[in-house]
Image (cartoon, rainbow, N blue to C red; front, side, top):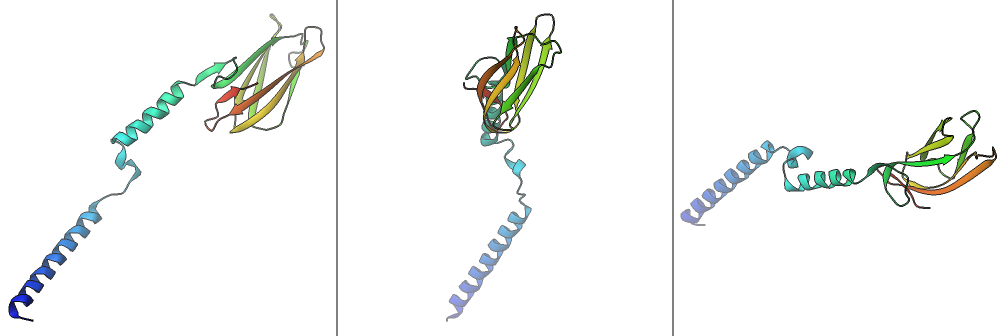
Length: 151
């Protein structure tokens, strides 16, 4: 090895060490965080998608095949005590509340989702003749606990 090639090798190695050290210093100063993309187009587009999705879900509905936070079922009947109703389901992912109006003799059932999945529900209540009536329904609950009556 000549003197000149030895000098070139030492200079090249010194430059390589300087570049490597500079890269390590630069990388050690970088922070890795989930918030680092907060102002990026990707973060903003995902936020807008979620907001648009939530904005399209109604607070409540009484119609079939409409996604909502609550499904409302109203029917008339004669309930001398106001709690003459019950239900039967094949899953535990629904919450059912009922309010009976003695003046209008109307049951108002509010059904909400508590977990994702399907459910077959049979509501039982006293009809205008004081006999038990049944309303069969099928529901689907999505991951956001929105509910849809499908049948």
